[in-house]
Length: 196
Image (cartoon, rainbow, N blue to C red; front, top):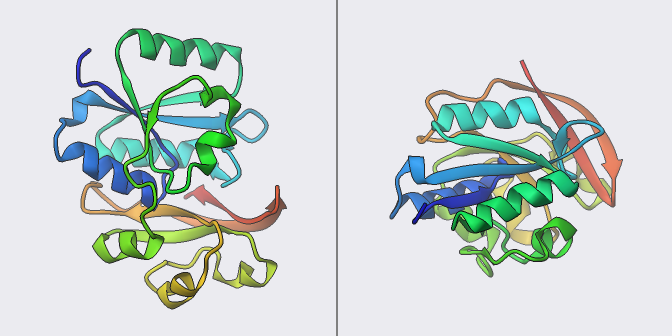
């Protein structure tokens, strides 16, 4: 199992940038995407991205996606990955995801994007990516918009935000999606999306 990697996958720009870094020195069959879903809505953490849309991304990337929940069984699965020699990676730029996810406390997780500004990622990026969550209520109007269209706002903002990649040259085709409702959860305003 040497060289095997597990990448915690959010479907957003930072996850994709981390995947691209891994692909510089590893083959696709050496990488597994792993997403932590909540049981209530079968969606990703506080971003509201449904599991079915994450599956589409993985399929279009040609990668395996493992779905876990924040429970004891998932903890055992992660322990098994550790025993098999997998290395863990995350696209977190500030450590927030790792620090706020108790399930990950005992894992050694590499964060190759730590400290990199979001604007720097956008400059190197060729994907089509939408904004899916914001912290400020007045920024709700930006939800669901492509970040290339609102880059000036993102350069001025220092808030934590979430994105979702709808197309990248690594994908076979564009992710078919529609915007649904905006909800407030845990201090974030989230644009729910769904597969069409």
